Image (cartoon, rainbow, N blue to C red; front, side, top):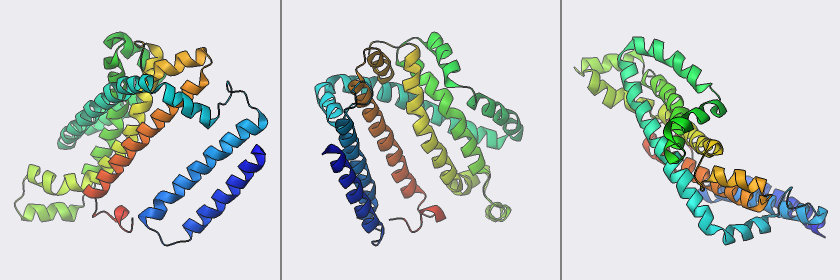
Length: 280
């Protein structure tokens, strides 16, 4: 019965998404398609786990994860505050802010661009499993070390995108500003910084996913008795996979909300850019 229910849910979800995709594009249909697709996956997941009798140690059912979510709401909130708000968000703000300020300085002095960006590419290629233990030893086991890991992870992607964006204006545009007797800072604020916004937001969106990943992974190498990474590592050892999946759900929701918020801000700031035209 469960397998039949899963097949029926998949067929119904597929048909509904095909029908929605064929309708005129609007905000309602754009939101409905991923919602229907997600609900279909959850129903099929539940049906497969129950139909084949899969052990909850290997893959718990969505209903079991939801039940654990309700029972452990206090623990999940505490872990969310420790990892997302203290570690990831603070590191993100510090790292991105420092990267944007550094980009202006690098843009002003060309020798810094030639010397710093190759070093940045090298540092960005370093694996987090190598840098995280070092930073944990330097800054301690609380959220400060996780924020430091996030700063290292987000700094150079934002820096590279911001520098490239500041160089995106044409010679004709810069010459036009000079005919208006505009100096460097006026040209930067009125022309080059607005033109760089699509590049900057691209870096900020990339950094938003890196920040959460960095904070969670850093907690595997040392943390107080709270945090999403700490909870995941200890719960795996205790075979409490329903709690592990609950933490994953919280991380996915937080990351999606963060990315979506940045996308909305980007749309409001860069409404003039061709990439934003024609979007609902």
